[in-house]
Length: 328
Image (cartoon, rainbow, N blue to C red; front, top):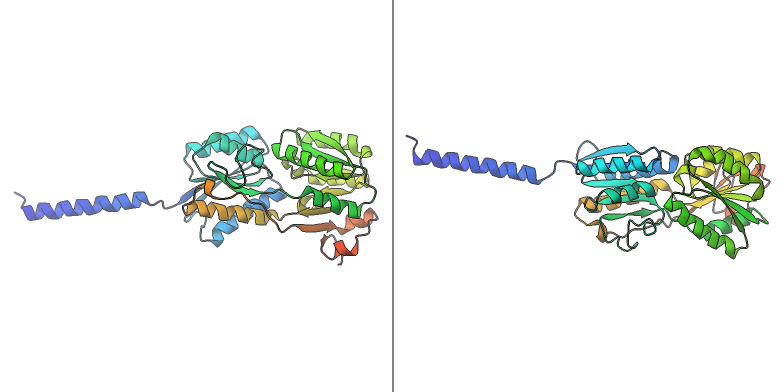
């Protein structure tokens, strides 16, 4: 027969064991983050790198206290939907969406799991947020919106007598349609005609751009993911015809564009990382304001400027960064 004292000791041991198990289950050993990047190109790659580096900087290291499941949708919205459905079904703790269609796909799939986006120009027009101040839902992030009127002023100071500018974009990207409308408004104020060069996939860029190239004095490339994946082709076509390219971001200038007044996508990703950390540490996405970056940079391709016989004014040269040579 077992004594009361022995039974008491056994009972306490069982209780301690249960409490121990409960506390282990209550605290997650790892935060599971699903990353859906729409397509691979320089700007989005930098944004993802910035996101990871900011997490690491704050002590969140992949495979240690966080687990990042990265997937690339290869430019296909339906694939992005499938990826985010997988993230939702596996109950990720947070989804990081890189580019507008990726963010839209994530929001289509879950209204519960926190979503942090980057490289989304206008989340309100994309219908994933009620306002920049507060999404009013499970979404927050960092917009890559840039002031098109200032970009246009920069181009005019470099390229004289611009009468028509081509605008190449994917007609199905909400992000790009917003930029087109803003660009039209800015161009109208400057008595500049806008020639729309719409595409639905990368295979249409060659033919559609070449068909419009003789109708334009310059080309504008927005932060469009389809166009960005073929910047080298866009640059070659324009350089062959001596058409200057105003890029919304730096990667176009590296690929043969003339100038940009844009943001650093690596820094954009780091800012998104800050918002993810706020969520991991207890905030709701609706409590975190959607922001933009203020530190715009002028970058000029000096080689292209020389080929186009463009003299960079001193006041711009003093502020600009140059690639392919160039002295201030």
